Image (cartoon, rainbow, N blue to C red; front, side):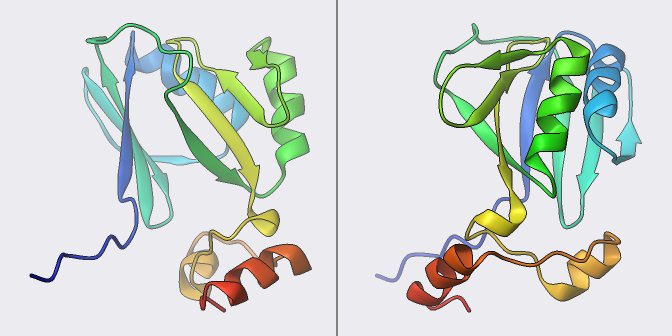
Length: 144
């Protein structure tokens, strides 16, 4: 039997205490558009992907469960987090907790294997390259 192939992640859904404060927090860190908004949910667009903010917590906070965001400038993100007084977690990565306790890890686009198509980058108004190390990783996996 042939199994279906994983192609990517369409979205991540985050439980938040309230929608407006969550949008305010993320809006102070990142530039984004909200495609849909209701009293119980908001959808933050990230090109061909999105983050769904869903009001209400059903699980306790977790020390290890997290998701990774890709940014164009990790150090600018660190400065924005510091300016907002966000809890930046110790370690070699840039991990932080949002006000609802969601753990987020930030990585920089040019330094990792993850890649957007040129058309998606253009649609997002971005011109981004890759470091040689990231290109080598992509090539080693037959992705460049």
